[in-house]
Length: 156
Image (tube, rainbow, N blue to C red; front, side):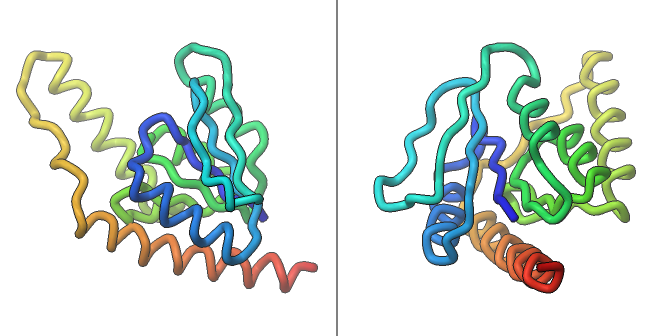
């Protein structure tokens, strides 16, 4: 079991939560980004993979290397959809779990909002990342990580 982070846009607070868990539980954690992302010196199970520049290169890497039972952190809905289809547990930085039960509706809403923006309509942006978001992420991440660990140990 591995933890994957779509690291280009992951908030620092999210990475810190994941780093602590990875270090405590000794779980291999891979940050995938278009440029080097600093990892803590004491987190020996955490590494960064730098992909070549270009649209969706980090996403493609995670999809190619992620395996069913792994856990992924991303705010990218199309990537989340691909990972859910592949059998990974997926959480976004604000604590939303993406699953086969909700990913289609989330993608549909995203596409609808893209169409509105393309037509010139102001749709507003996301609120800034704050303590409530970090708490929601930590809670969902912990739940999904516990479930993934149980599944991995029962299949061994």
